[in-house]
Length: 334
Image (cartoon, rainbow, N blue to C red):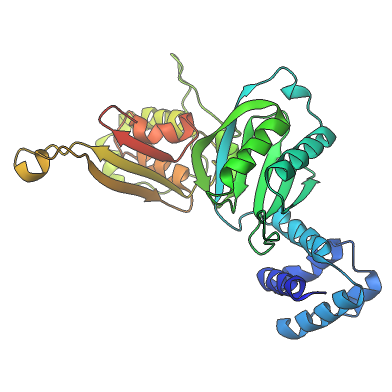
């Protein structure tokens, strides 16, 4: 193995938690049972890494084989970086009939036509998702396998999820995806997070939604959080109504574990007591960020418990209704 291949394997082994390492190597097709039994998983990780490097070098494994191990690990543990959601637009007539083989051929052909040195690996997961690993080079340098881009796409859906993409590579990837999926364009969905499943479920509405009704049936909270007795005593008659509105805004049952929502303000400053800022022609700029281990669950509880006013402001309900967590607020609206 060359120096770059060894470095790639070393970094990958360092990323994989020790308790998962034996399982991941067992799913890798390039080590036999005898090879696995020759490795002592009770040794310090750095010692095991040296033995694994020697074993892979003896077997003549290349970058191609190491990236296969990386894909196994990333697919089973996708929350490794910041994922960004995108939406494909203007589908052609044959877009719903695209099959995996066609997609793979078209995507590879389109991307290699746009850039000379690029490494592409495509794998279909058990949940029908297509996982794509792209290592980028350019017309003069070889692909950098230490900083790959990962793409997840379900065929016959207009959604794409990407992590590890740079602004330089974005137009190339977008064009290759648009052509391979038979769509006209692709736009940023303004939805991002470290939990891939959460942003996928939010963008595709894969959670229990509650719709307004003229004759609402009282909802029952699942796993209710202890309430503030003072709030409960002040407004006992509004409890069911608050819960209904909270669930209409954010959903019922288990919600996608979104971790933050960002609001970028670009509005005119309005305060008669501060003429200096009020008189500026340029908009007042600021950023407000809400964060939580489960933001939607937290917001739903704030509304249902009475800590937040009802009806729910569109600035918050737009997270689920529009499937996004990044908003720019101007004087013309969001």
